[in-house]
Length: 262
Image (cartoon, rainbow, N blue to C red; front, side, top):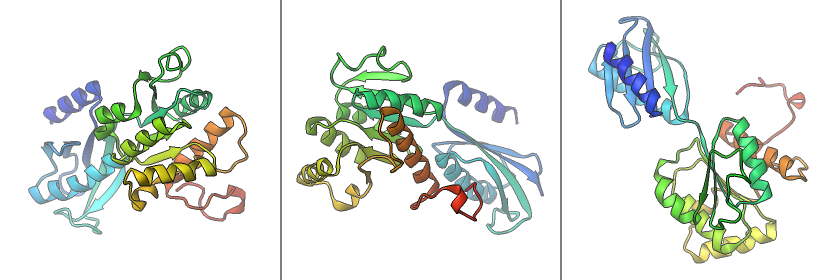
């Protein structure tokens, strides 16, 4: 058991994602297993099949950043109740990568910080991409979008977001192409409908397939009547939250009779 806690402490210190599974009811109550994002296990729940079956589900919970109670059979069989486990995900903060050092980026960085995102602002123009202009950002990078994503793209997950706020094809097209090559969960692009149609043609000419283009949220954000950069930032964050919740239709809560929490 001490190795489980030692590995958990080290993971927390180095901010490595891990998931801790504890049997809270049934055979082996108190048994624990710690699983890294790469699948390495420390400890045991009591048997190989149980470890493998519960471990597979736990890794799925870790990828989604979920924590909660799950029920299994004695050997990890689903849809049974002999065994109850508590699955606790320890993940790094969600990441938001913002391309374009513009006024909208400053407002979005501030809003995303309130939602506990780790925010990176990236622009190839050093005169604009400065920490002084984006004090809320965790990181300001002076580089081309495709070069940044070549370095960090493999680490992006379904929990993360990329927001392209530029209106220049030499910036946004390479950024979008590179972002589509990652597993990022939300990819939003700013611009009018006519700008986006022109952008789509450029992306098609780059060989981007229709299925990939369907991942784009463009124009970015929800239609809440936003006018200012700050209001636009709220609309973008609202769309990200709705996307994460799997909502296609957004309505005021007072118009609904369903539970308010998903």
